[in-house]
Image 1 (spheres, helix red, strand yellow):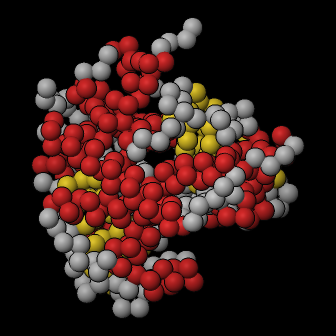
Image 2 (cartoon, one colour; image 1 turned 180 degrees about the vertical axis):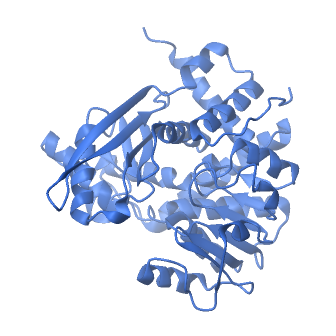
Image 3 (cartoon, helix red, strand yellow; image 1 turned 60 degrees about the vertical axis):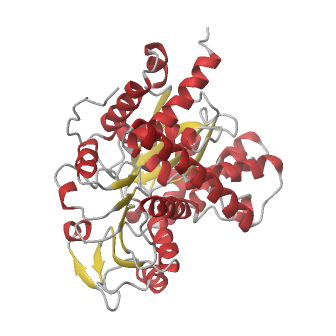
Length: 422
């Protein structure tokens, strides 16, 4: 069976998620009844969050928590604080989380949350009050057995600590397993902070090995120098790749001879941006994506590579550290160009994998050494890459469709075995 569906251009991430699901479901010849059960979210909670700001006035924020699937286990997914958060974005992210957890074969379903806000313009006190209000509002959905939040865009271990404390106070005793990505002092896992970037690194190494492309000396471009992007860049730099361009929300920099990534990380920690880094020149965002390179890592937000700019991509490997950075239309263009794409639900699954490790440690009250975490993560990521690659080669489909086929197939099997209640 060949994929013949026409991809329509869309900036709506949930529509893109549904298109990718349909392509995979069609290739699997998925039972129509199973398709009806697993395509759409199980639960959607939309909350209004009145928060007292520092100047005394009350500001109302919009918040969401979506559980796409709990067929294979508790819902799992991050919470993002961003001015562009919408319900459709959260639904898409929850959907991708379902397939992502299934691709790396951990016993979770997909969830996601978000609050529409501008965290960079808020004080620490305002962020804490908003986070606690949000946690209290989604309390009926979350818990270590039903839905486990984690950090995402503009949220971090401190955000998770506030959610854990809010939840625990309502129960009367500490429940560290309600969230992952917590501080180590509250039951967090060693290796969790760098887990997403490490997962990107391991899958990129696997892709390079498959293609016969040496990592040593390979030119690398990273769009989005946040947690995942900076860690992936640092690890590739350590493997003697040449990181020539990076960007963050404030601008893009380039050095044809390579950037000193450890020094750049230190520079950004001090200044809050990559612009102005000594020895680098500022370039435009469109120039960054079009740089001649072996490896391109889009690690910012969704829809970064679409039908308009995909033709300018010159990379041999695109590793999706972000969620949904390439639109379905962009996918087809990259495929036609012969670009090897590592899809997001495989490439950036290191974060949720180590979140699973953290949850296991919390539930057992027994914690692992960092080396144990790294070894287990490498094994999971490389095994999952090999499973997706096998489908890609055997069925002659794109890596995106292959990953979705693996994820959708595993969720479909779980639903079939469980049956329909009542």
